Image (cartoon, rainbow, N blue to C red; front, side, top):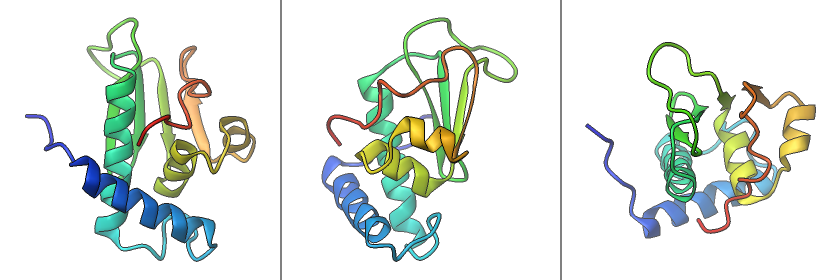
Length: 129
């Protein structure tokens, strides 16, 4: 069963609160934000990503909060996906909202990406969240 969808108003409010805390420097790697608020922000942004770029070619993981499959192409069916992108919650929020560039996240080893299609540079920041 699919997880319940986060309402846009709830998701945007959580994203704004988390983004503002991170940009103010009051948070390091998601520490310092209420866990429910951080979880809502991460899951909402993953939901927006999957809605904007449907498919099953790339799996984006933000443990322990969530993961989605996105991007059109070959479907992953068994075992470890061929294209995986994984990062912590604060990195995902900053990438998705445009506070961190994909190239910088890779250079700083804040993102682990494997597979020939595991490049989110054209997908982040998310245009509408």
